[in-house]
Length: 424
Ligand code: PLP
Image (cartoon, rainbow, N blue to C red; front, side):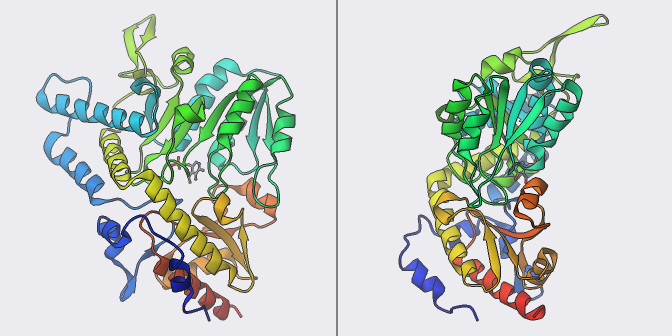
């Protein structure tokens, strides 16, 4: 049996930065039953977060009151839509402290942002003999775009190994950077499986000292901690709206202005041009050069409101709250006999716990938890090389967000005991 007083023991030592019940009231989905009589415990936040009323209402308001295409119309609705779309860009610029709104490109998400860089900067700058340095812990979206480009351009990809504690081998990184052919380092900020927070400030300094650029996949950091792209001094930074209270289908590529200016466009069409003749075309200014066609207007506006929501709550408070939940979750998970939790200790990781349980397959764990109302993810989490590194085909993953409670951690633990019993 799980220890009945664990939550009280833990909470006596913690001061929580906000009232989570008040926060939960902002998310209508969290109040519903997962099955009749069984409340929803949503612990699949690394895959996608839930949405607060502020965002849901903003989408509703756009479609009800001022739905129109942007940048093209002279009429009032189009002007309103354009103003809201561009206001969202400014909100996001402030949120990540970019130097200019021209450095904020709307994309469909992290995947598209990384592909954009691989397709345009990669095509223009990488050639046979060059090296791109990535890591074994990357999400497929930061491996495959480079493999596709490497197959065409003939450069080499080298991977920083992962140590047994789930952190990067930084000595190996330093050694890789001794090769003067390294042109780009592309690394995740926070691992979606291990939760490892990579030291991107130091990694950026080292990359730059070696004459390379650095791209950071911020899909799992931007929703959970304060991000300042100028302080990080990264060249490109990618993230997704749907993991940070925003809608699906919208994401951001941040790039330093001089780099973006020099990059060729990738998709051609409306809005990204300055002039088109039958003999050729010239390109629009940043950021529009990379935003061909009708953009994801509602998504961008919704993301702007998500950023408002997160900023009002406070990214530092969110981070502190999640650290407390994650520490409690790791403490409780460690009590479960036969469990292996992957990744570093609580103080070095985000609010993610991927684990295996004895001989119970991760999918069976997830299915039994689902019957208990607890939604977790099972599989390779788009990190097959990392799972291979740890010698497991799949893990179950509980990932937490600003609205999860200590009681929900207890529900997870109780569900795991049920899974063990069912497969004993
Ligand atoms: N990178 C990381 C670390 C992720 O966790 C994810 C999504 O799970 C992605 C990239 C891809 O994000 P998206 O599917 O929103 O493009």
